[in-house]
Amino acid sequence: MEKDKVQKGRSISKHIEETLRADIASGQIDAGERLDETKLAERFSVSRTPVREALNRLVAQGILVSNGRRGVRVTEYTREELAHMFEAMHEIEALCAGMAAKRLTLLARSSIESAQAECIKAAEANDLPGFLRANETFHLAIYRATENPFIFDLASGFRQRTGPFRAKKFSTGEDLIASARSHDEIIKHLFSTDSAAAASEMGQHMKDTFMSILAKM
Image (tube, rainbow, N blue to C red):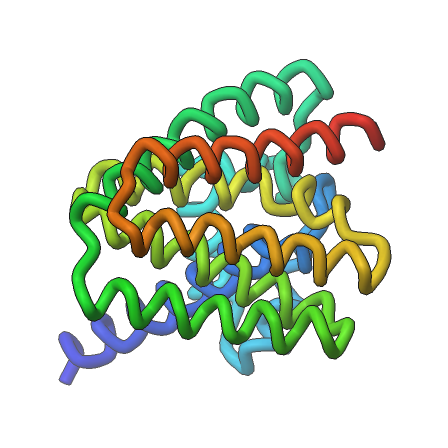
């Protein structure tokens, strides 16, 4: 019985951690934003213990930073730090697209197509939160298609940290539609199994995104 309680507590804490990580990655929680344990406990209808455990793990991952008695907040970066992260992320995203093109399975193809359909749907509805979630799913599906868990972890880690900044790229419905449509070229090359073209197209997609973000900082 006691073991079951411990296991349940861990699963609740893990759920909170994964939800907050997704919210940060999709820009729904902004860089520098303070996370309040009490409010989060109310949001998830739990005690503060699993919330604290989840926050501590996110701090250990560098996604959050501790302010001592003032709690935790989402990690912020200078323009220079962000430029360095984007440079690394550019190379990793291109690598993932190239590997995915060579190793694409029917299941991976279906996941990418499904995510893109959600991107288009959200963009046309001018649904920014929905688009950000679908966009994360789209890129994660490509990482997963590499069939290399280490590369998946590395690539998704950069997306989690840069989420609040990447979300700032989108200020109009036209921005969402343009981003969603740019996925079409990536998909075309991915599905043609032309790894070099897929890597190049993804690299250009990420370069356009990063230059747009840095220009606004």
